[in-house]
Length: 344
Ligand code: KG4
Ligand code: ZN
Image (cartoon, rainbow, N blue to C red):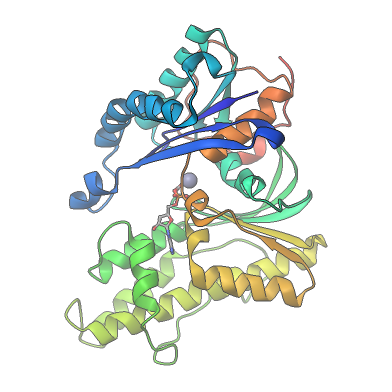
């Protein structure tokens, strides 16, 4: 079964064809809107929707060309139905659902975060269930116990900013462009780890929730206290380093706690911030010390992409799950309301 994945929840138009464990990933393509939104310092929802609309069908033709296939070779369509920007979601959902109907094939509505959680399944040595997942993206910071496809228990989440959002806001304070995560990470690599020490929010009390908005204030206050700003390259790098170290340390403390509490030995790190090298190597050390196993999607499948949606959709379609003919799109959609794939 060749499943087309359609991802348009935010600022990436992603398409992929996944053909099951044997066929594997036949191809995937991404059109990033980063350049489109960069002048505004963040994603402009209306521009995002319009660009998805412009890009989607030409991208589909390119993908099929690359795979040497035609539209008739698509056996099912998986589209991201939420959570995300509602206008952007509606474009992918309309195109995905309509394409499936026109071809006489089944469709399935996929939860974006389920895509992120299952993305490491596309790698050569996939994790076995149950695993613990740290899902860190622009919109979410979650610790999730994953018992199987559709069996997700949220153990902790952010009370304010998501990790990626914090990276993006700190990037603005440091005079860096959008998106901020990779820019802050690059600057932090040049920073002095001993000059500033920022707090590790919510690590001194029990629980697995996060809070990152205070760190942003810490960055602002430090820049002010040092009398520096965008012009002082040394200061900016040292502040970026202190911020990143605090985020990485906080995630390490919470992941260790969650692994101990659950007795699970496998950690999956997913979502855009999961592309951060400092975070990856720190968590790798932690899990190795504990005698467990860690899995990451390749960096391009940490950020939004069509492959993870095709995979999650394939899991649901092969179990007989079918989306109704109505076009489904939900800006908000709690992860723990999902259920295992079910026929019907
Ligand atoms: O998963 P994703 O592509 O989109 C959402 O579903 O939100 O995550 C995007 C987020 C952005 O906030 C971006 O700044 C952050 O991931 N990000 C990073 C890195 N690469 C992307 N944050 C820290 N370090 C990185 N290397
Ligand atoms: Zn995402």
